[in-house]
Length: 186
Figure 1 (cartoon, rainbow, N blue to C red):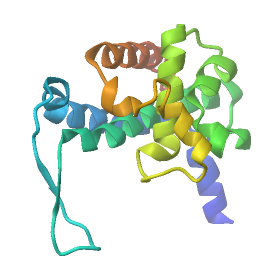
Figure 2: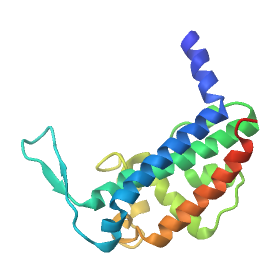
Figure 3: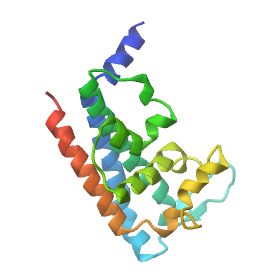
């Protein structure tokens, strides 16, 4: 019983959600600041990845970090939104769990009623895919999930991860963060 009460206490504290958002965003920023130039310049920086399945390390370029970076940004946005929702509702609602709990467009536009542009809605749909699976697994459970990453017939991550999109994501984060700062610790 103690652990359930502790779990509920943590889930019902908006500031815990906000703090987690800040940590996740800092991780995404660190990845992007370290490797963003190589990603955008098309340089082939190399990172050694050691696999338990092989005695040879695999060499990957900075593109391999796009998925984890987008996942961290998406999780940061998700945590801000859930913190704001907890603040508004007074408690964590179980409907925010599961695949719908990672649908950033739904969380931000429908549940939080936060205004975003059509371009930002597309970016939120993309980030949701990375939070749900593309930032942590080699493939989704369903082949239909690939369609969200293939709007132009190729992997969005490798073709359209550009500075304008990063600026849009950063702007959205800043707007949500401003809302978070107004609601934090009150």
